[in-house]
Length: 560
Image (cartoon, rainbow, N blue to C red; front, side):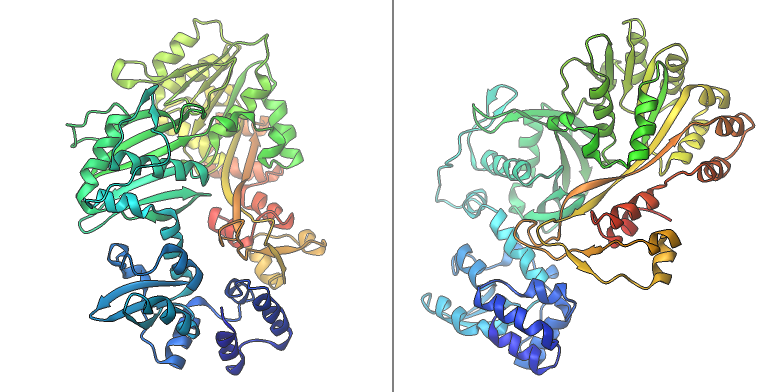
């Protein structure tokens, strides 16, 4: 943001006098101050764009509806676009239409454009939308995209070829593009990669810290080539495009780097196959239980439950909520020389030495049920089942828990009390649940505030805090609430990494009585709250009080 735009905001009496010195100091140090302005809630990106459009008489455009494939190449370099914070949208004759969030930078943009023999005409856009497009430019590899778009000019890739399942991958524009995408995903800490194909566009998105964001829009002409290339790498049937397929890729980006596993799923859609790749992070096995973010009383309950000689521990939550990491952290604690641990998963996401891991394969008849039956003949002490999906698996797991084995597993339910009704719906007898289950834990992941840029904020009114779940005791305590700002360390997101929110419910005698008498989920929840259950919302509020996350993030992640 320039001095000119700050002057406009001051003239409109939008900038408080006490903030002015801070902004002037930031301009002197050549630091971007728009994140500060938005963070101080002086003006929103939308309101700023409307103000600039009115004051400077430039048209306004919503960049979300502008196809990135139509952005004019070869007029400005990526470095110039980043420096000037502008994007060339359209060329008509000798006129170039340029998207900006700060129109007072016109002179510098005209200088940059003048060398191409064009004159610049400005279009005002929202600053947050402009940032997304500039980020996309930074992430995308223009040379590869050109090459994939059948540009005649070929460029050699500097990086060595990928090694897929021990064999060197062939070199080509599509293969190199996929290599770049996978490399960027791993380095940016993404958990999933989405290749999506539509009628008039294709796009690649990463899920980072639970949020999906667009990275690049490859040419539409190569959508079938991209999907086929990934299917070849995952050893899937490339001729079959009518049914979903599952596969797995193990790859190295060069000969001396660590191998990374990807789980691949294809889904036939209207305009091609959507491909989703899950990055399987083996490093998660080294997590200490203290790093997961349990409260002290929750950690005590878990440690007591997992160290029992037999019984069942269930972890619940939606896909991508960190259930597997929690289970493997518990297994890592129990993984000693004197125990035999076996796991059945679809597929094994984390490789842990000392644990016998089995990949479930339904096509070959190796189901969870079949694996469990085999485990019970393998002299096990601890069994981990990736997911209880049906009555057969649930029955064998419960029998194992009742006959002197420790059983760990996951279920897809919203909270801990709902797990019991889910098992009853499967057809599990109430007395089996009561006798087998030791502890149920529900979890979610909330984005963690970036420690580099989080700033204290004034607490909302007490009435509003009570409504979201804070108690009178909480409000009487001295604690600071923080808000997200955004900096280079967190790519202007304000959040970096995720923290676990946990609901730990041990199976008490009262609960067992209710289950035996045919009690509902509500009855069990009432007893749990009577016995001091810290639910997901409460766990999130404790994280807010500790300055780990924001109240908005907790509300978005949990139900009351």
